[in-house]
Length: 131
Image (cartoon, rainbow, N blue to C red):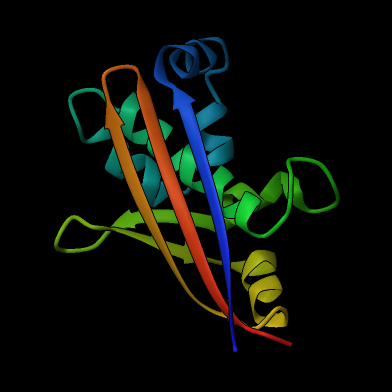
């Protein structure tokens, strides 16, 4: 039997922009080098950063985790969202979060991003085996 884990998150881009402006190292702390390169290549990088941040939060929600606890400070860099050749986003998990997925029998995941006007949103679906 399979088990489905779902997470969703919505980001208000103007508020997110304010955080970026007040904390110059925000992008370095939360996004991988490849994510930063991709987001900064566009005319307005903030909607792309916001979508990726939403995906990271949605992934943590799908795993039943929050933003507190041991190891969580580095977890956001262990969740990476990069475009495939087609442009479709690809969710890549590393380190501690990848090990957690393996331990829980999660063997497949997907992400969907959207941003329009003042909002960015993401959904993450994880598929595992019932233990």
